[in-house]
Length: 162
View 1: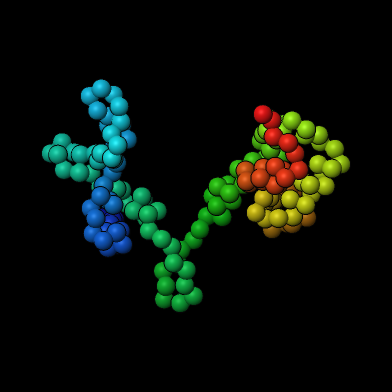
View 2 (view 1 turned 90 degrees about the vertical axis):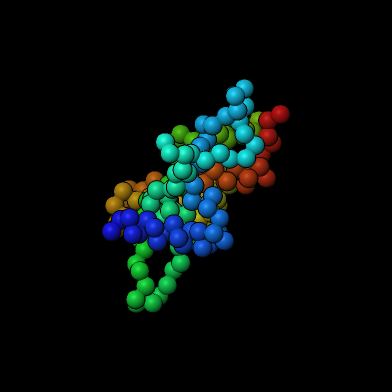
């Protein structure tokens, strides 16, 4: 049954890419010319018989766009919110944000002016996300995580090092 799904997914990828077979071939990133320099265009992996290898079912699933529907007969799709959160908010305050800001700006001081800036930015979900220890209890222990793009807002307030 897995084979059938894999073939269907690859067929959909081919249809979406105007039947270009390279859309399902596995790229060989380690292939280089005889002198060791990489090729300008991608080279594809082959099996012992010389046929091109195609992507696995998991990569085929990830390659297809997700369409949301309210139809009752639509196939249910779940998005792992934890993975989505981690991909967006990669920094913690002490371990990532502060060291990066200290390295980036020459006039950074963690004073009341800094607190005012960070408090305003923490209100914006584009820059800050909150994780609760118990996601059902919003009054419990929480931790804030930051999107690396938050530094663009700090650029408006501090001078970059030269």
